[in-house]
Image (cartoon, rainbow, N blue to C red; front, side, top):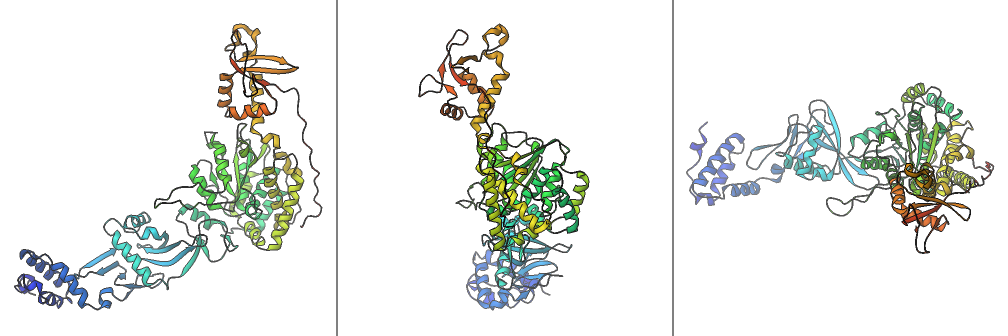
Length: 623
């Protein structure tokens, strides 16, 4: 074969303005290697003749003289063991990957291995579309669900590299073009799959994951693992034996944990607010196994391999976890891993809000706020509600202190059995809830329990407890048939009254204890042994009145986590402080030879009476 330089005619600059050079070159297109040689020589000659438009005119000639089928191609994918066959247009898709022929006749590689879209994924809640991408790198085919926005940008498509796909800054643009074109060519042929990014109720009344035709469509590998783990495993009768032993046992806290798990999907049905059930007490009594029992209603309860999480995550991770759970219980183990106890209230308020924080989107506007309506079941060796917790945190939490009493006779055996048998009861429970008659009966039972609990119990606590009791009653009718459901008297000891929920009343109780623990600071008879004087205690109209130097009072209450202003306003309304003037919360008093500004608080003179307990009555229950 003659050298390319000898084959090229001696074209002039004027010749390059005519059709002749381009027609001659186009006739060599059957031999792609020779054509590339000739094009290189022709381009050098045009450059020597100071003719800059050679490449542009060559491309225009090819486009105008090639049939559209030749330019775009009419290929189909022929990947080995491909999940489906697609029209690939100009792209050659075979065992060597993806490539196509450029206008200059050169072969352009898109990807070194097979990759193709196989499904369009549509979120049933938001109608957002994603693509199910299948790819192979010598070890069979794998699937990856990817948002369209990540496939439409060369900067974002590089993220696929972390899943083993051969994409980098050099071929990213070609990858975007290929995926866009092959999806466009096969848009109607690609099967459509409904998806969701959360567990629980869907717009059509189904309950994920116990529904047909709906898959997990999120991009979180961890949540995808949990979603796929929400399945039946082992033997239903073996699980029933465990659950029935708990229901007939002495441990009310273990029974409450099981009931709380069933209550999760009822929160939205009954229009209630998310709430906490916190199991706490001595280490080694089976609280984590109680959490595993709650998890086994829905799926894999194994710590680590299941869906139980630790309190050790960040607030954002806990928020995302709650949004994913949506209508199944949020399970958080080992409260004590949080070193900052001030975070407890933040966690309660955040999760009981039922929606994620408003955050700005990178492209402008706000991100979609995720929502959940469920029960949070948590464990720890300490209470989650502190004496200085806000009233809102206290009423949103049912604290179940089991002390040192074991929750199970043989916790290790129960834990091992639960790892083998799980996921049956949740499906049965929510399938029954799709019957309107069952829902109406449930609501009637919940209202009945609400009425029995109302009185001195705080309203939000009454609502949460009534859901627990109604869920357990319904589980008895639908699943257990043992007539061992919880009663009002079982749950009442763990509920708080209106007075106990008042943070200012708890602040007053703390103040009284603080004074009692530091009496020498308020006594002038101790001489130098009293240390720094904090005030004095006198009798005022037969009542003990303690005067505390204002700075000392404010420092002590603030360090304990209480709001000084809120407490003084409440104390003044309730006649518990003495003031200089009607518009003041302080008074001047002689202390140690000086007259500093003090806060004067009356100490209690006796114990308050308890509230009346309504009579429990199970008559006229719908089931």
